[in-house]
Image 1 (tube, rainbow, N blue to C red):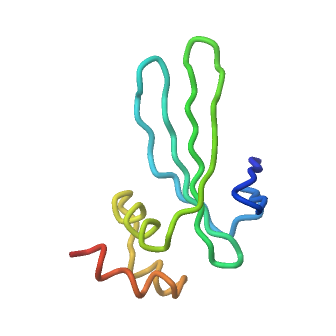
Image 2 (image 1 turned 180 degrees about the horizontal axis):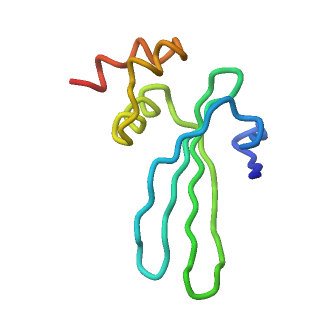
Length: 100
């Protein structure tokens, strides 16, 4: 479980409606992982992890992302945008922008 304060809102990964692993990448002596979440109120937020391999320290933070950015990230991760748009109506409006 991860909890963050983004602006004046507390988000909790356990309470998210959906979670998408956006992949990871090696970065220097560590590894970066990103996760995208959708809240029950239809807002999208992204969790970033940076883990150092030598001593297992972790730096993490979260930020809000727009619907268009969420759609772009989901598309890059190989998710089916038409299927997700059927589930989350707010994605319908931005699918054309992402797929151009």
